[in-house]
Each structure stands twice: as structure tokens, then as C-alpha cells.
Image (cartoon, rainbow, N blue to C red; front, side, top):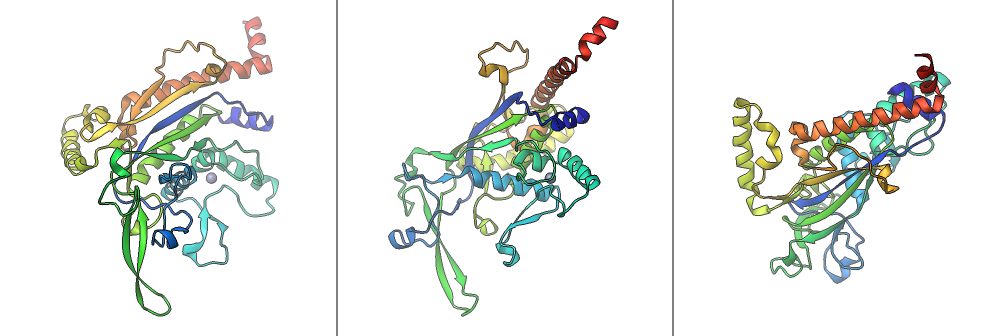
Length: 354
Ligand SMILES: [Zn+2]
């Protein structure tokens, strides 16, 4: 595959073969704070307000926040070198660092080639994208993350326990670094148990992209054990992909623990991950494969199913899902081989000779 990639990149041609559409709900398990503008100080009495949709006044999760959190989780888990993209002269906690296969300035041809090879294998740079100034031909980042809008539960707007529409206000005591005085700070958060509808698009330019897609699932799984938005180290931002009934979460954890112990004994059980976790789960995440031909209204005549349901936390245990992905990968390799042959005319020559 790699040789084919390189050849295609050299020709500076990029063909979109299809898209995975990943959609579903994100459930908040602890309060979620994604900062908005702080006009709320005067009107609502909060120091740190959440970002809200101007039309509906409901809090939402900006696609950039979700994408950034997924990227950060994956690049740290892979231990990739980070580069400072903002706040170079600021203290470390205020700097923004991300991983890019970038290298030093003034690379020679040999070094550029090596960097390009690194890039072709790097799931972070391929999934999330690299800036235009990298010294090699790069694909566009495969992943598009849409804003995720608040969908429920329905009583969230009027819930009496909430201080503001759709949100709670958490008071924290902070110590002023200079004067050592303690003072309260008010943080607005979306309460636990809220559902946001998310959608991610994963574009496929080569069969290898299926491997990168698996790292996106890993990033989702890593994020569930990390946090989204701000104040994560103080408990905010624990989320779970899928629509869950929050009051049953504790019970689920217990069941999961018991099941995993039982799984070690009985093999084969672990493939039923989505069903097994059904308790408290209302809807798993849905992943749909859409071939480019579908956009032209053509019947693609594939025996593969169109969509799968899964939970990020156990995608790799779901034989069904991994087999489906492998099937799509094989199909793509077939299509690409055909295209490659017809491009070079090899196919015809071969047929004539044999
Ligand atoms: Zn990279």
C-alpha cells in the first residue's frame, strides 16, 4: 500500500473513496464546562460561563473542542513529540502544544523524505491534519467534527435544582497567587446526565485509512477516561459516548466489573459488548459507511452492511465491527488496484500477454 500512496502523492492526486459517518450522543457524567465569552459576569454572576448557541441559548460542545480533546488524548498516549503553536513565551500551562510531523527548519532532501515516511504512518497527523507549511505533500486531515448540540433530557431547561437555564453553578474557592487571599469563583457547568448529539465525518483516501480510523476509536476511548472542556483535574468533563441513563451508571459499572471477570473464564462472551452493556444504555454510537458512488446515485452492489452500532470502550472486542472494517478495507484495496492498473495500462498488457 505504501508504494501506491507515495506514487499517488507524487502525482499530487487525491481521490475520495468514501466516508464514515459516526454519530450518536455524548452523555455528561460530571458537570461539563466549555468556556464561552464572559459577558455573564454582569448578568448572571458567574466568572466562567459556558459557550451557548446564540439561537437557542442552549450550551453546546464546539466541534473544535471535541476534536482538540481527541487529538490531545491520542498524541499523549502515543508519546509523540509536541511543538508549541501558541504562547511560546508563556509559562508551560498557558502554552498550546500539539504534535505535528514537522521536523526542524531547513531540512535536506534526505531528511524531508524521512519525515514524509513518518507522516504516512502517523495516525495523529493523518486523522487530525497538518498545517499547509509542512515540507512534504500531505493529505487533508481525515476527520471533520461538527458542533454537538444539547438534546436532552427535556426537563433540563426548567429543572429547579439548576441555577441557570440548562446549567448549574459550581462555586470553588481559589487562592490569589499574589495576595494569598481566598475568594470564591463561580463556574457554570452543564450538569451530569445531559445528552449532546455529535457527528464526525471520516474521509477515506486510501485503504490504510481504516487503520487510522481504529485510532480514532482509541482516542474516543481514551477521552472517556480523561476529560472534555475545562477544570478536568477538579472533576469536570467526564463524558461517555452513547446515550446513557445516568442514574443507572453506578449499577452498570458493577455489572461491567462482574462481566469482565466472567469473561476471563468464558471466551466468546466478549463479542457481545454492545448488548451486554445495554443496561442504562439507550443508544450506542452508529457508524455508517458511504461510498463515493452513492453520491452519484449509483447502486454500489456490495454485500457489506451499511452501518454498525458500537461503544468506543469495547470496539476492538466486537468481532462484528472489526470484520466489517476489514471487509471495507479489502474492498477498497480491490478498487484501488483496479484503478492503479487502468491508470498505467498494466492491466491490458498483462491480459494480452497471458
Ligand atoms: Zn505526526
